[in-house]
Length: 385
Image (cartoon, rainbow, N blue to C red; front, side, top):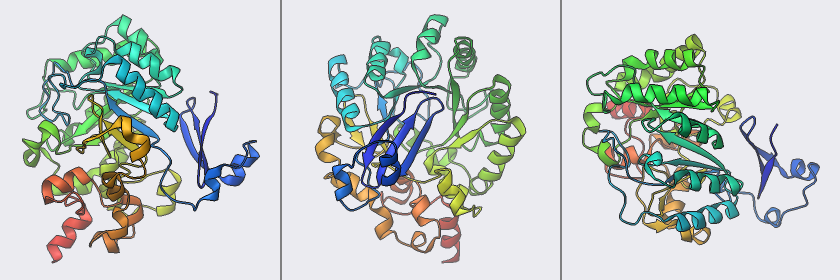
């Protein structure tokens, strides 16, 4: 078992382990029982707002030799203001000082930044756990060995055949698969990131089979987001209404069949809730919808941050300690459920789902704060109106 890290919160504290990976919210009595003294935060009213994000998704570069059609970062060329190594280290110091536990490093393609492993080592030395998302194309045996520094490496693979509408270079698939195998050979904890689109939905069994055969840690299913280049063909590639309704039972059955732990990103929670799961179990297993600007934060390679990686923001990560409690952008995201319109207002899953994906609402409905228009409940309500 790894060393336990902790962070005080108004409700008590958060405990973090890397082996096994675990974040646990505990009350004040539990913290006292561990030998921690009372925190000044305990003199304040309890609130659902955390003192800092638990995880920051940090793009270390926007450079990427692959021009995937559904890239939410519109990656390709480096951002003009890409942070230098020195500036990146200052950002790491700031986030570690706030008590952030995990930093998910990506791009673009992070491995295309020449000093990437120096940056990753600095994150690890700060006390945060670094994780990596990569397309796997730059993976060699030497690179894979260096990846042992990460808590986990997730390789992006959306399908195991070069189907029409895949959105990625068909020739890159074999290289991505080889990247997975090299990482496993090096003893690295490996998962898959799979963007689920209309054209790839029926191909999910092959992805689950691949993950099961390789004994991968998990398979994370990501909803296609209308962000970056993905806006261009979003309406042709987003899941159909029927696929959204079928999503949960399909994923559940495939996970059981191939014995692969399946994870969904928060934007799929409305599709999960459509099947009316037990609320207590959802809370027990920390299944929740949009936590942009509270649990999560997205930072671009030039240092601008937003509530998540799929939203746009102009505020600087170097101002985050001051802005965490004062940013209007973050405040509106966090308080969405307080002013939720129908049909979300009457939904029994409101405080869990939190209205679905803000990026989808902004692009499809034209309003960042509208209910997710692709939520099956919202679609049903629209048909009845």
